[in-house]
Image (cartoon, rainbow, N blue to C red; front, side, top):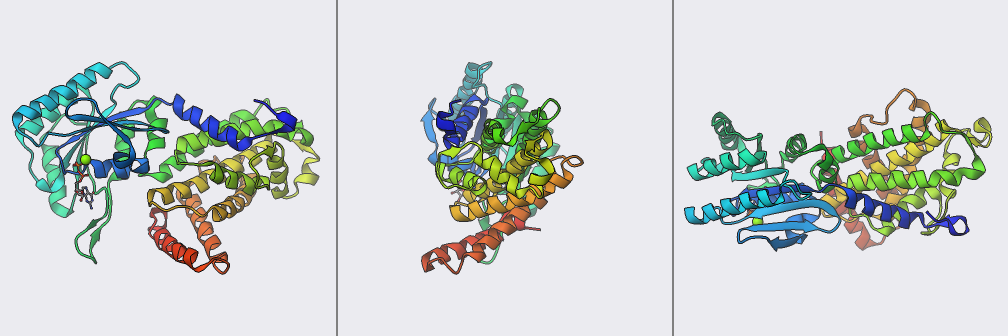
Length: 427
Ligand SMILES: Nc1nc2c(ncn2[C@@H]2O[C@H](COP(=O)(O)OP(=O)(O)O)[C@@H](O)[C@H]2O)c(=O)[nH]1
Ligand SMILES: [Mg+2]
C-alpha cells in the first residue's frame, strides 16, 4: 500500500479491495429447473440482485441449458428449457443436466443445489417429473419450489408433495413477486427468505459469502452476516496485543478500516459506485474529495467521542480504536442495508441523504459503543438497528424537502411511499 505525500486514495482502495474479495469468493452454482412459464425467471430476478435473469449474460451451454452470470456477482445459474415438451425432449434435457453435473464435479464450478420449480396451483405433478426429481436428487440436493402460490390450494399441494416422501431436501411455497388479483386485492410476495434460509443449509460453507452477496431477498440477513464478521475483525485487530499509538499516528488505523469497509461491502453485495463511497466516507471524514488524508477520518471520529480529548490524552488505546472502528462498521452496514433495499425496489438513492444518514448513525453508534462495547456483542438486534436507520433516513428527507425543486419532490414522495412499504417498516 502506497502513501504518496502521506495521502492515498482511500475510496479507490476500498473499491479495489472489494472487487478483489468478491473475485476470491467461491461462487455459488445453482440449477433452476422447471417447465416454461412456471416462474423461473421471476424467481431469479427477485431472489438475486440486479434482475439477473434479464440483465445477466445468458450463454447456451447445451440445447436446453443456459448459463447465467454477471460481472461482479459471485453466482452462476443454469436455467433449463424444454421440460414441458414431449418425453423425447425431456429425456434429452435430463441427459444434458446429468452431463453438466458430471463435467463440473470437483471443479470450482461444481453445482451446489437445484431449485426444481413447479407451479403451485397446477396441483398435480406428472410421473415423468417425479422420476426426474428423484434422479436429480441422487446427485444434488433439490429444493422443490412451488411457484405462484395462492392460498389453500398451494398449501394443500405442498402437503401432498410432502406426503409423497420424495428424496428432496425441502419443499417451499413462494410468491416471488406481488400478484394482482384485482386492483384492490394483491397477494404480497412471500417465501423467499425461507428459500434463502433453506439454501444456506444445503450449500457448502465456503459458498455462503458468495450466496449472501448475490441474494437480495433477505437484507437483514446480509446485515447480520456483515456484523458478525465486523465484530470478530474489530476484536482481533484491536484486542489483546494492540499497542496504544499516539494520536499523530492515527493514520495507521486507516488500512484496517479500509479492510473493514471493503469486506463489509463484499459480503453485502450492492452495486456500489465511487460516488456512493465518497459520500459515505465524507460523512465521517469531513471532506468531499476522493483523495483523503489518511488520518482525517480518525481525527474527525474523535470529535464524536464525548470527552475523548481529555480522557484519552492524545493516546489511542485498543478500546478507543475499536470504538471508532466498530461505529464506522456498524453505521456503514446500516447505510448499506438501506441502499440495498432501495436497489431491490428499483429505486435510486439520494446521495446527500445517504451522507447525512451515515453521519447521524455514526454519532449514535459511537455513543452506544462507548457504553456498551464490553458487555454487548456487535450483533445486537438487527431489526431495531435497521429500523432506526430507516427512520433517520426518512426524517432526513423531510428536513430537506423545503429546498428541493418540484420534480425532485415528486420523486421523493414516491420514495416515501415506497419506504412506507419497505419490509423493515412492516409489523
Ligand atoms: N405476480 C407474479 N407473477 C408471476 C410470478 N411468477 C411467475 N409469474 C408470471 O408468470 C409468467 C412466467 O414467468 P417466468 O418467470 O417468465 O417463467 P419461466 O418461463 O419459468 O422463466 C410471468 O410473466 C409472470 O406473469 C410471481 O411470483 N408473481
Ligand atoms: Mg424464463
